[in-house]
Image 1 (cartoon, rainbow, N blue to C red):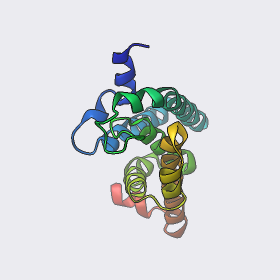
Image 2: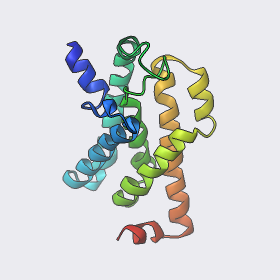
Image 3: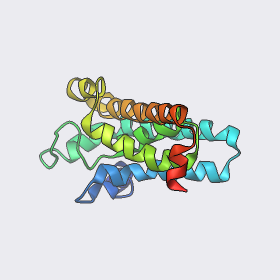
Image 4: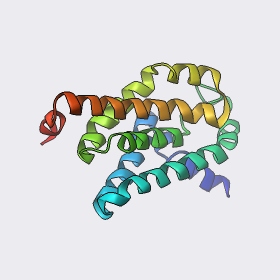
Length: 170
């Protein structure tokens, strides 16, 4: 794989190079994959599609982590988790519609926002993972935990107030 292709993939089509909120912009690729699957696939294939996308993005994260850490050494805020490397953000968002299989637009709006907030504040065990696990697993797992939390929060709100979130976006 060429350096150019590695950089293109690792930055989510260069979204990770944006000066403001690269992780949030990069995570939008997860939203795109989610809504493309929802629009083009029968309902029973949506979750397998999302899981396949999650596995592919996670595999790419694992393969490209050593390259990304070395490539951005000295240029990233966190030496072992460069902010430009956003595959973990894509994978983290994909956890939201896998856990919350309700209204896809609720997942794409509120789930995305919740995921980003939870990924930034890092509720345990995401904080422990972020601080103590290194390499590709450390980069990836805190985002997967935050995405799962966001999906669970959506379910809790859906159970407590059915249709309330969908009503806010319609």
